[in-house]
Amino acid sequence: MSKPGLAVAILISAGSVAAVAEDPPAMFGLTPSRNMVSSETGLPTDWDVLSGKNIKWRQKLGSQTYAGPVIYDGKVFVGTNNEGERRPGIVGDKGILIAFRESDGEMLWQATHDKLPAGRVNDWPLQGICSTPFIEDGVAYYVSNRGEFVAVDVDGFADGNDGMQDEQYSHEQDADILWIYDTIAELDVFPHNLAAGSPIVVGDVVVATTGQGVDEGHINIPSPLGPSFVALNKHTGELVWESAHPLESILHGTWSNPAYGVAGGREQVVIPGGDGVIYSFAPDTGELIWTFDANPKDSVWELGGKGTRNNIISTPVFHHEVVYIGVGQDPEHGEGPGHFFKIDASGTGDITESGEIWHVGGEDFNRTMSTASVHDGLVYIADLSGHIYCFDEETGELQWMHHAYAAIWGSTFVADGRIYIGDEDGEVAILATGREEKLINEVFMEGAVYTTPFAKDGVIYLATRSELFAIQEGANDGGAG
Image (cartoon, rainbow, N blue to C red; front, side, top):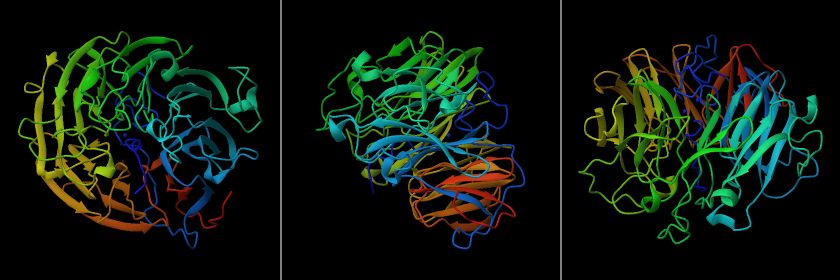
């Protein structure tokens, strides 16, 4: 298994409305509640990669793909590496964000980021861009493999050079970069293995994690005052606030993502920290509102990493004044016991005991990197071991569990009365929503699926490890754009 694969929640895995958390489609890269539920209908349940049945188009990506896809304004955005060498003249290991045309899959432009000179301790080889972009008002925000917060024009140079005038890559197929903020140079951040945070935009600020973590020996925090959480002005890229929580208590790295919601009459961005604690901040000031320790006191098993605590790679979901979140670790640590929580977000201070509404864990739920889907009184969530769970939203009672028999890095995507989810063996399971387990179909994609599907206008967009597919009922050509 390649490393780190830490952005899948990414994805993915996870979610142009900045202030309304429940408006559909509540998708990872477009709505900050992060609820993986869409109002799309007419989606296919059967397709064939080999024959081209229901394949509208397919396009080559890099050799490892963890971020996106996200659809916006007729374009599909995917983070990958440069092994596909899509942009003529750019060769070697890079982090890449590619924009494809939604209608036919033609590549429009790519953002290119060189690797950091420190190597794998800060920028793991061949991982590419693992940040799923958040898109609003024609601007895509993401975190590069170099620990930079980046804002790019979704139209590239097609509408002129609207931002920086000195981009390193300025061919017509390159990205029109509006601004870049380097957290390593400006804030002394030390990302462990990779900066992989997927931002959200709330009002005038863009918020994300930085990857802040331990050194190569997994013992020391080289820069304990380097922030784990950063908020920038979305228009200018200027620093608005930062938080160095949890200082020297980071277990491994800070790879989760923020979610936005309102609870107790307060706007909040909820961000899991690298210490296994969840933090709630006021989005405009960074004032700390509450904390929740997602490692129960009876967690005595060996977890890998540091001590007997789980890290958090999953992205929280903010839904009806509560937060849903699971715990897990770098997938290289393997399977193990985990926890999944429903948390009342209306409190203040340490709400570890007062905020817990229900939780499952131990032998009943394993480590996860996935983001939940909350829909029609039910919660759907997967774990790394390949289980897909359906819980009652009010009680946490298990309704059913489906076993994919392969590791799951991505997240459940709920739309059209179905649950779509891919696995490491390249199978996409399609299950019916509801309180009874019903497998509709399993489709083989000929490549591992580490991302989460996205749908728009009856088309499912799905990235495997090395290809991007547009899947539509009645499409039969199956050809690459």
